[in-house]
Length: 137
Ligand code: AMP
Ligand code: ZN
Image (tube, rainbow, N blue to C red; front, side, top):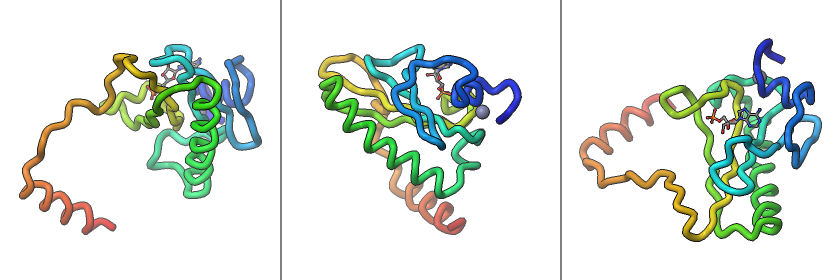
């Protein structure tokens, strides 16, 4: 538990939240600024600032929970799609520095845009990047 971390306080139950799921490792609750109806956050009870700090076991559990809850949200809300979003760093839109994963149910014609500003890349640059990244593996 990190002092002054709002998600540590929510995850431990010290601050109330609209919880839809809880187990010994996670709390999942509705976002107070929902992008769409049913926007939820999967939050580990242990504090990790971001994805770089996450251990493999927690990471696996997060995604396993995301699959289960995506099916649940689809059934409960009759959504037409689902975006999984996970921000790391201010530049990427992270505002709460306790790792979390967004589940954003999508509805036909909801008008939300996520990752829609893509354009064809330069293939030489893509090849350079492929080599650069692979060299670190
Ligand atoms: P991010 O921008 O990825 O760091 O996401 C942080 C999310 O936490 C935002 O979508 C906020 O709306 C949400 N949030 C912040 N405080 C609370 C809170 N007390 N209860 C529920 N959601 C919150
Ligand atoms: Zn925290």
